[in-house]
Length: 347
Image (cartoon, helix red, strand yellow):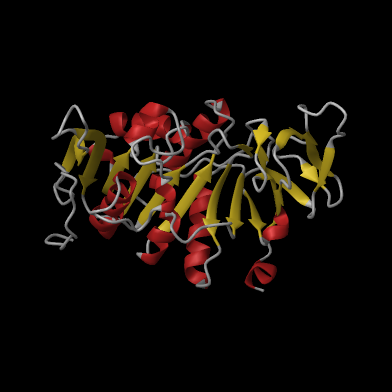
């Protein structure tokens, strides 16, 4: 891909993606402030290239309060030996650095969710500028993207990879195979509430394999989520031939691999009809039935108002459960996933 023409960006990148060996540096994203007119935000980036093979991109910290990917990718960036690689690995452990340092989903610079800003705008807000750089100056090199997320402070999540339903059968098969190689307990094929401006959708438009994760949440570092993430990044490199070895996919429950699931329609999502304190009925990963309580809304400011029960509309396994306690009308409080069925998914 030498000589690839990239779109103009305001972000300075010291990495030559065509250069062999290990390169480590910082992206410099301009941020003019009251006390620093020429200030920049520095974002660590590492590239490891050797021999011939595909390019894998690992990203973490697109949401600042999601920690497992930041830990796993940082570890890989520090330890990956170029001599063991056949191909190219680009690692950005904490891309949305202002949100990472602020421990928030949204950027404190522009109050935007960067994962709703793609493909971005080089002359837009700070989050749009970051999104534009990733889309236009990194993705053109990439064959496989693994964007490691958790549910942050919004939810808890059953440990999973995730992907969109892809109409192209071959791309769908290859993406599901990559998910199985990553080796999380679940892989969720989903139709989201608002996906058009996400990084996953952006990678798909570029024609690359796009895999996301949800490896914990509720504002904490999930011990098993970190283990799955660290094993998963190695597994992806093995699966695509960048490293020798066979992916390790055994699960703690004794199963040999990943269980493929789907979130097919809006009935899988439980929305709150009021602002209140939410008490969930189940833990993520538990089996649930349509008609069973998903939880209760408590109006603690009105002592004589009884709790309002919310019920699941679908049978399946609880993928996401609301975490912050107090929720707002219109918030999702639970998401149920069912076993993947290719015929139903295509319907």
